[in-house]
Image 1 (tube, rainbow, N blue to C red):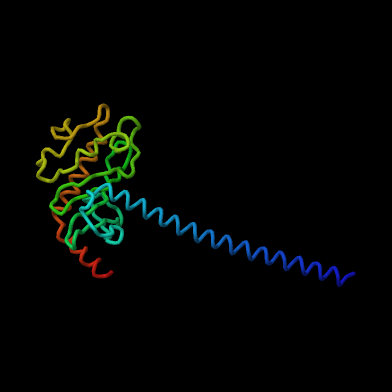
Image 2 (cartoon, one colour; image 1 turned 90 degrees about the horizontal axis):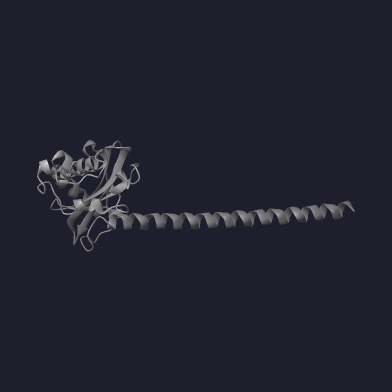
Amino acid sequence: MLPELSRSMLKNSLVLALFAAVTVAVVAITQQSTESRIVAEERAAQVRALGEILPAHSYDNALLDHVIYLNESLLGHRKDTPAYLASLNGQPAAVILQANAPDGYSGTIQLLIGIMADGTLSGVRVTQHKETPGLGDRIDLAKSPWIKNFDGKSLSNPKDGGWAVKKDHGEFDQFAGATITPRAVVTAVHKALRYFDQNHTELFAHLKTTEASQ
Protein backbone atom coordinates (compact mmCIF):
# COMPACT_ATOMS: atom_id res chain seq x y z
CA MET A 1 0.00 0.00 0.00
CA LEU A 2 2.74 2.43 1.01
CA PRO A 3 4.82 1.92 -2.13
CA GLU A 4 1.72 2.56 -4.25
CA LEU A 5 0.97 5.71 -2.26
CA SER A 6 4.56 6.89 -2.69
CA ARG A 7 4.42 6.25 -6.43
CA SER A 8 1.11 8.16 -6.65
CA MET A 9 2.53 11.11 -4.72
CA LEU A 10 5.66 11.12 -6.88
CA LYS A 11 3.57 11.02 -10.04
CA ASN A 12 1.39 13.90 -8.84
CA SER A 13 4.48 15.90 -7.87
CA LEU A 14 6.00 15.39 -11.30
CA VAL A 15 2.76 16.44 -12.98
CA LEU A 16 2.56 19.59 -10.84
CA ALA A 17 6.22 20.41 -11.52
CA LEU A 18 5.72 19.97 -15.26
CA PHE A 19 2.58 22.12 -15.16
CA ALA A 20 4.43 24.83 -13.24
CA ALA A 21 7.34 24.78 -15.70
CA VAL A 22 5.01 25.04 -18.69
CA THR A 23 3.07 27.88 -17.03
CA VAL A 24 6.25 29.83 -16.28
CA ALA A 25 7.46 29.36 -19.84
CA VAL A 26 4.14 30.51 -21.31
CA VAL A 27 4.06 33.57 -19.03
CA ALA A 28 7.67 34.46 -19.93
CA ILE A 29 7.02 34.13 -23.67
CA THR A 30 3.80 36.16 -23.40
CA GLN A 31 5.51 38.87 -21.36
CA GLN A 32 8.40 39.13 -23.79
CA SER A 33 6.03 39.31 -26.73
CA THR A 34 3.87 41.93 -24.99
CA GLU A 35 6.88 44.06 -24.04
CA SER A 36 8.18 43.99 -27.60
CA ARG A 37 4.77 44.98 -28.92
CA ILE A 38 4.48 47.82 -26.38
CA VAL A 39 7.93 49.14 -27.33
CA ALA A 40 7.02 49.00 -31.02
CA GLU A 41 3.71 50.78 -30.40
CA GLU A 42 5.40 53.48 -28.31
CA ARG A 43 7.98 54.04 -31.03
CA ALA A 44 5.24 54.28 -33.66
CA ALA A 45 3.35 56.80 -31.52
CA GLN A 46 6.52 58.90 -31.15
CA VAL A 47 7.10 58.81 -34.92
CA ARG A 48 3.51 59.96 -35.54
CA ALA A 49 3.83 62.79 -33.01
CA LEU A 50 7.09 64.01 -34.51
CA GLY A 51 5.64 63.66 -38.00
CA GLU A 52 2.96 66.21 -37.09
CA ILE A 53 5.67 68.80 -36.46
CA LEU A 54 7.54 68.57 -39.77
CA PRO A 55 6.03 68.85 -43.27
CA ALA A 56 5.73 65.65 -45.24
CA HIS A 57 8.75 64.96 -47.47
CA SER A 58 10.84 67.61 -45.67
CA TYR A 59 13.15 64.94 -44.26
CA ASP A 60 14.14 61.37 -45.08
CA ASN A 61 15.98 60.10 -41.99
CA ALA A 62 14.60 58.19 -39.00
CA LEU A 63 14.15 60.90 -36.38
CA LEU A 64 14.26 58.51 -33.44
CA ASP A 65 17.69 57.34 -34.56
CA HIS A 66 19.09 60.89 -34.64
CA VAL A 67 18.62 62.12 -31.10
CA ILE A 68 20.78 64.42 -29.02
CA TYR A 69 20.25 65.43 -25.39
CA LEU A 70 20.12 69.05 -24.31
CA ASN A 71 20.01 70.65 -20.88
CA GLU A 72 19.32 74.27 -21.70
CA SER A 73 17.81 76.90 -19.42
CA LEU A 74 16.56 78.91 -22.40
CA LEU A 75 14.37 75.91 -23.27
CA GLY A 76 13.21 75.52 -19.68
CA HIS A 77 15.11 72.27 -19.14
CA ARG A 78 16.08 70.97 -15.72
CA LYS A 79 17.55 67.71 -16.98
CA ASP A 80 18.85 66.14 -20.17
CA THR A 81 16.03 66.28 -22.71
CA PRO A 82 15.95 64.71 -26.20
CA ALA A 83 15.96 66.78 -29.38
CA TYR A 84 15.48 65.25 -32.82
CA LEU A 85 17.57 66.10 -35.88
CA ALA A 86 16.10 65.86 -39.37
CA SER A 87 18.00 65.64 -42.64
CA LEU A 88 17.07 65.45 -46.31
CA ASN A 89 19.43 63.90 -48.86
CA GLY A 90 22.18 64.06 -46.25
CA GLN A 91 21.74 67.79 -45.57
CA PRO A 92 20.38 69.38 -42.36
CA ALA A 93 16.64 69.93 -42.69
CA ALA A 94 15.18 70.70 -39.26
CA VAL A 95 15.34 70.12 -35.55
CA ILE A 96 12.53 69.30 -33.14
CA LEU A 97 13.17 70.75 -29.70
CA GLN A 98 11.36 69.96 -26.49
CA ALA A 99 10.73 73.06 -24.41
CA ASN A 100 8.98 73.87 -21.16
CA ALA A 101 6.92 76.96 -20.44
CA PRO A 102 7.19 77.07 -16.64
CA ASP A 103 4.79 79.97 -16.19
CA GLY A 104 1.50 78.47 -17.34
CA TYR A 105 -1.57 79.33 -15.30
CA SER A 106 -1.68 75.85 -13.72
CA GLY A 107 1.97 74.85 -14.01
CA THR A 108 4.53 73.88 -16.61
CA ILE A 109 3.42 73.46 -20.22
CA GLN A 110 5.50 71.02 -22.27
CA LEU A 111 6.01 71.69 -25.97
CA LEU A 112 7.43 70.14 -29.12
CA ILE A 113 8.82 72.84 -31.41
CA GLY A 114 9.88 72.10 -34.98
CA ILE A 115 12.31 74.55 -36.57
CA MET A 116 13.43 74.26 -40.17
CA ALA A 117 17.08 74.79 -41.11
CA ASP A 118 16.28 78.33 -42.31
CA GLY A 119 14.92 79.26 -38.88
CA THR A 120 11.20 79.14 -39.63
CA LEU A 121 8.79 77.25 -37.43
CA SER A 122 7.36 74.13 -39.02
CA GLY A 123 4.97 73.47 -36.15
CA VAL A 124 4.40 73.62 -32.42
CA ARG A 125 2.45 71.13 -30.33
CA VAL A 126 1.59 70.98 -26.64
CA THR A 127 2.43 67.55 -25.26
CA GLN A 128 1.46 68.06 -21.62
CA HIS A 129 -0.33 70.71 -19.58
CA LYS A 130 -2.69 71.22 -16.66
CA GLU A 131 -4.47 74.32 -17.92
CA THR A 132 -8.11 75.06 -17.16
CA PRO A 133 -10.60 73.10 -19.33
CA GLY A 134 -12.57 75.38 -21.61
CA LEU A 135 -10.11 78.26 -21.13
CA GLY A 136 -6.36 77.65 -21.13
CA ASP A 137 -6.63 74.21 -22.67
CA ARG A 138 -7.23 75.81 -26.06
CA ILE A 139 -3.47 75.66 -26.54
CA ASP A 140 -4.14 71.98 -27.31
CA LEU A 141 -4.76 71.35 -31.02
CA ALA A 142 -7.55 68.95 -30.09
CA LYS A 143 -9.39 71.89 -28.51
CA SER A 144 -8.51 74.76 -30.83
CA PRO A 145 -6.39 75.57 -33.93
CA TRP A 146 -4.69 78.42 -32.02
CA ILE A 147 -1.33 76.60 -31.85
CA LYS A 148 -1.12 76.63 -35.66
CA ASN A 149 -0.61 80.40 -35.56
CA PHE A 150 3.09 79.67 -35.04
CA ASP A 151 3.46 77.86 -38.38
CA GLY A 152 5.88 79.74 -40.65
CA LYS A 153 6.88 82.26 -37.99
CA SER A 154 10.53 83.10 -37.25
CA LEU A 155 12.65 85.52 -35.25
CA SER A 156 12.12 88.16 -37.93
CA ASN A 157 8.45 87.34 -38.50
CA PRO A 158 7.28 88.96 -36.33
CA LYS A 159 10.01 91.17 -34.92
CA ASP A 160 10.83 90.92 -31.22
CA GLY A 161 8.02 93.24 -30.16
CA GLY A 162 5.49 91.05 -31.94
CA TRP A 163 6.39 87.98 -29.92
CA ALA A 164 3.70 88.60 -27.33
CA VAL A 165 -0.06 88.30 -27.00
CA LYS A 166 -2.17 91.22 -28.26
CA LYS A 167 -2.90 92.32 -24.71
CA ASP A 168 0.85 92.94 -24.40
CA HIS A 169 0.91 94.70 -27.81
CA GLY A 170 2.11 91.61 -29.66
CA GLU A 171 0.68 89.71 -32.64
CA PHE A 172 -0.72 86.58 -31.01
CA ASP A 173 -4.29 86.20 -29.85
CA GLN A 174 -4.99 85.53 -26.20
CA PHE A 175 -8.06 83.64 -24.98
CA ALA A 176 -11.02 85.36 -23.39
CA GLY A 177 -10.51 84.95 -19.65
CA ALA A 178 -7.15 83.22 -20.10
CA THR A 179 -4.19 85.39 -21.03
CA ILE A 180 -1.51 83.77 -18.88
CA THR A 181 -1.54 80.46 -20.75
CA PRO A 182 -1.00 81.73 -24.33
CA ARG A 183 1.48 84.30 -23.03
CA ALA A 184 3.58 81.48 -21.54
CA VAL A 185 3.51 79.48 -24.78
CA VAL A 186 4.42 82.47 -26.97
CA THR A 187 7.35 83.27 -24.68
CA ALA A 188 8.60 79.67 -24.70
CA VAL A 189 8.42 79.40 -28.50
CA HIS A 190 10.25 82.71 -28.91
CA LYS A 191 13.00 81.50 -26.56
CA ALA A 192 13.31 78.28 -28.57
CA LEU A 193 13.82 80.30 -31.76
CA ARG A 194 16.49 82.38 -30.03
CA TYR A 195 18.21 79.21 -28.84
CA PHE A 196 18.16 77.77 -32.38
CA ASP A 197 19.51 81.01 -33.84
CA GLN A 198 22.43 80.95 -31.41
CA ASN A 199 23.19 77.23 -31.68
CA HIS A 200 22.03 75.86 -35.03
CA THR A 201 25.57 75.19 -36.27
CA GLU A 202 26.39 73.10 -33.21
CA LEU A 203 23.02 71.34 -33.33
CA PHE A 204 23.43 70.20 -36.93
CA ALA A 205 27.05 69.21 -36.31
CA HIS A 206 25.59 66.48 -34.07
CA LEU A 207 23.65 65.21 -37.07
CA LYS A 208 26.89 64.27 -38.86
CA THR A 209 28.12 62.59 -35.68
CA THR A 210 25.01 60.43 -35.25
CA GLU A 211 25.01 59.44 -38.93
CA ALA A 212 28.70 58.49 -38.80
CA SER A 213 28.11 56.26 -35.77
CA GLN A 214 25.44 54.18 -37.55
